[in-house]
Amino acid sequence: MPARQPDPKRWLVLLAVMLAFLPVVLDMTILHVAVPRLTQALAASGTEVLWVIDIYPLLMAGLLVPMGTLADRIGNRRILLTGLVIFGAASAFAAFAPNAPVLIAARMLLALGGSMIMPCVLGIIRRTFEDEKERGLALGLWGTVGAAGAAVGPLIGGALLEHFWWGSVFLINIPVMVVVVTACWLLLPRREETTPGHWAIGQALLLIFGMIATVYAIKAGFGARQSLPVVLAVLALGLGLLTIFARKQMRAAEPMLDLSLFSHPAILAGMIMAMVASGSLAGVELTLAQELQYVLDKTPLQAGIFMIPIMAAAAIGGPVAGWLSARFGLRPVASLSMAVSSVALAWLALSDFHTSGVMVPALLAVLGLALSIGLTASSIAIMGSVEASKGGAAGSLEATGYELGTGLGITFFGVFMSVVYGRHFDAPPGLSAGQAAQATRSIGDSYLVARDLAAVEGEAVIAAGKAAFSSTHSVLLLTAAALIGALAALVFFLLARVKTTSAQH
Image 1 (cartoon, rainbow, N blue to C red):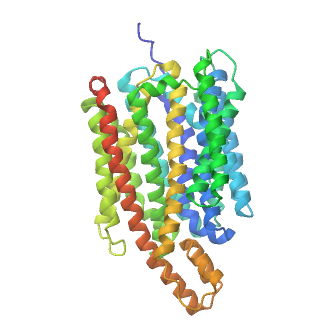
Image 2: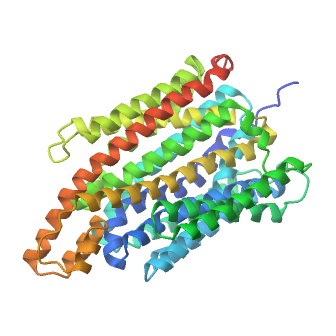
Image 3: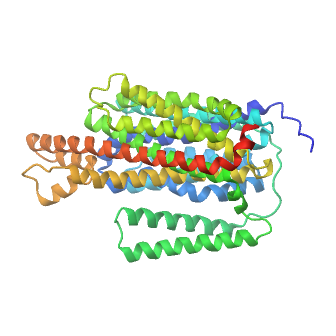
């Protein structure tokens, strides 16, 4: 089959979709730095804070595939612009939220907008770049923008929190959205190929509610927030809906989700990498942001500066991953990058952040570079395993892996953090039973309890909280290191069958 003539404006199109992707990433990383300030301003419990953070990726995980399919039906440009407008409006809603429940609702709207943006970005890149080398470079640049946005996010968030209230970290999205919507309106082609057929809203609802019910059951069960019968009932409902959805896909002439994509070893490996690595990274970033501010008493801006190495190094990992994968193949690049990440995490777990010197920033840089290379390699594996007509579906699958991994990672890390923190927290004498119970939930709750006590008693609670959290953060980083190490071995095994193909790229 003769190759299609490349689009002469393809690099401008790439610029437009990279700009569209930027605010989605910016929103997630800005919030990590704002958690301590937000917790105290809204008097949010540890559970509410977890929901504020992870309702966004968890809800998006259920919406990505239906929105990706809808974009294939009516056009990526239209869905992308709609998603950008919704995202901007939801940012304004979040900025002025008076309490945690309202902020959670605003984050749900942000998830709706983000679920329209992400699959369109990857689908447009796949359709625009037919040449494998150009596609690898384009995906590398896309990954660079994501990492750069993540690097700028904590810095912008920290700078804003130095002078303004916590809502400013959401309000900053508004000027960004004005620029991005204008760029996408002007640069994206107004005519594009669409997939014939109708959008099966019934199948979409099955997938959305099945995914949300299943994930909620996992969250509630793991966090012991619901009784076992309730958890099992919700889990059965979710799995039942997903089973019905899967059967409909196998019987449908035009399925919403092509389940045959999972038969590609590279796609399966890429999905697992996206979930485990993004989940671990999100948990690690959240842990470090709280360690730096609660334990080391750094300002939000200082915390953002401290975390620059991990994000700055990640920003150069995208293009490096494209070059390494083309030269050596996906299998060694993906598995070795995960192995290096595991070693860096374990070393960080044993490091003293009070006297970090240059070692901790160096380890953060190694971690950011290695994870960025591995995650970009997973993008190349997934998007290179399908033809252009299935680019939107593959893109939504990959984005689902990222968002589901991030949401579950924050949930598991948050609940695990609470359990470990409670076991290490040595409550000082003089606290009531209620105060002691609240202080053992999280370091944020310890600060809330200390705020209502006399100076001496409050300082004792904060000191106990700092000691407990330092121990907790070491356990969490070692756990993440073990997960990434297991992932390295699994990816090495899964990509064995695509070794020859990858090496030819």
